[in-house]
Image (cartoon, rainbow, N blue to C red; front, side):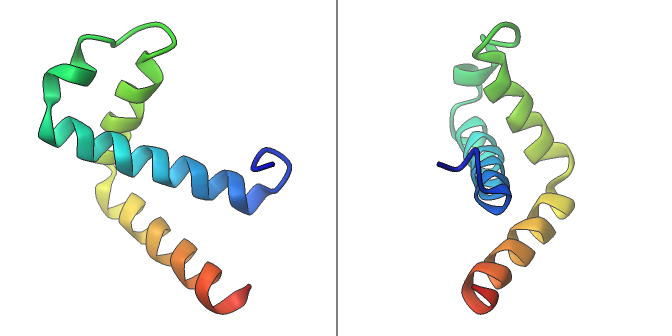
Length: 71
C-alpha cells in the first residue's frame, strides 16, 4: 500500500537508506560483495546514506515532524 501513497513511499525509501547505511557501518563486507544486480540496490542505498548523510538526516527530521504533527 506504500506504492499508492507518496508520503508512505518516501518514508519507506528513507528508512531503507538509513537501514542500509547502518548495516554497512556494522558489517561492510555484507553489502560490498553485492555491488551489481538486484541486491546492488542495498549497496547504492548505503552509499547514498553515507555520502549525503546531512541531507538524509534533514529529510528524516522533516518526515518525522510531518508524521507526528501534520497527520
